[in-house]
Image 1 (cartoon, rainbow over the protein chains, first blue to last red):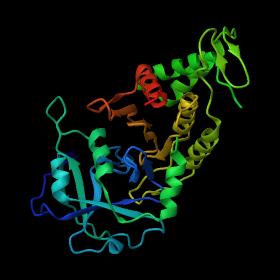
Image 2 (cartoon, chains in turn yellow, brown):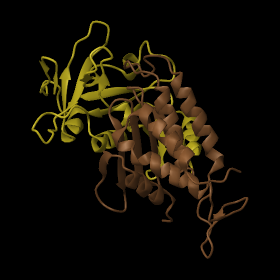
Image 3 (cartoon, each protein chain N blue to C red):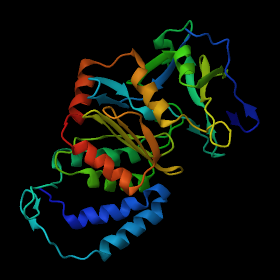
Length: 158
Length: 179
């Protein structure tokens, strides 16, 4: 993945079993009637877009080693949830992970696709199928309440 | 009850033909033009409950139970604050919301399960279903066009591509098909 002059490479210092977390805004989950459970919408897992340059930027994550989920959500409005995976799982999905220290963001990291397009260049976003698998495999670290789950189920019940 | 007509279906088909080459303003203008150009002649028998084609069972009835709620949700997404997702997300582009509303209406046929709709960080909308052994996601982006992700859990590998009219009709048929 490149972003201007920056080239992102998978960082082996993020070890296989290290936790990688992503915040989920309030309500950005859906009931998967095929699986019988709630999952974050796959759109939670995509590159961001720089509003000034229009360039896409890898997905921001929190590298959770040594942190608590509550610490990762500190300062966020009420209702945010947290989901996560281990780094090895992301790498199995052809994703790379690197550290991206930011002065005001705790344990900030980036996740980016390692997949190539037909021209042999890194794709500029996480593919739909990988996003779907991220959604299905995401573990809830800040879980939904029974009421939130039921609301989501009823909203899409056939 | 609102009844969807074959004319509406034809109009919707015309709209979705251009979705793969998404340009919100031109697409909506094109749609309005085609809607106004449609003939007003109906060959089907229209009742309170459905459209009945002679010698065929009722097929298309709009699903009113969820449509209003989904449309209200789309409207709300326009007014999301900046950074609503804590990752610098933008509120939904109103033109995208209007197109999403049109598409949701087109999907609102008899026995259609309700979709979930979500804002995307680039100001777009995702419409999705995870039901009846199929996962379908339609992503309308103000920058990257409209794409569809389709995974029939009974039928092999998922696929994803710019959404064509045929793809959208495939999705609609699959969602209302009996298991």
